[in-house]
Image 1 (tube, rainbow, N blue to C red):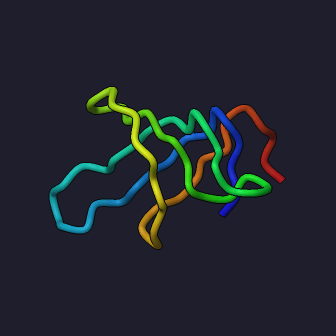
Image 2 (spheres, rainbow, N blue to C red):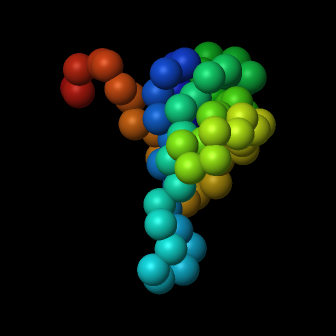
Image 3 (tube, rainbow, N blue to C red):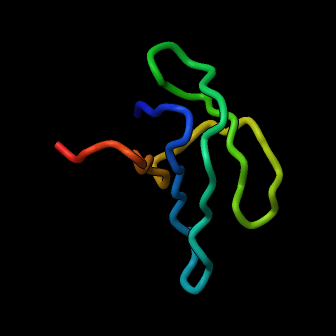
Length: 66
């Protein structure tokens, strides 16, 4: 997983009926855009250090799709 500042993290819910968890990446702490990331979560506004699991994906905002 690679990201840049400004990309969005999307974490799928683990249980039926729970909402998707989203946030904006505000800092990259791994080499070459790899995790962990500082993420400002959309639902709470809190910023946390996030180590993504297999339920997380990066949306590359503002970049053309290849």
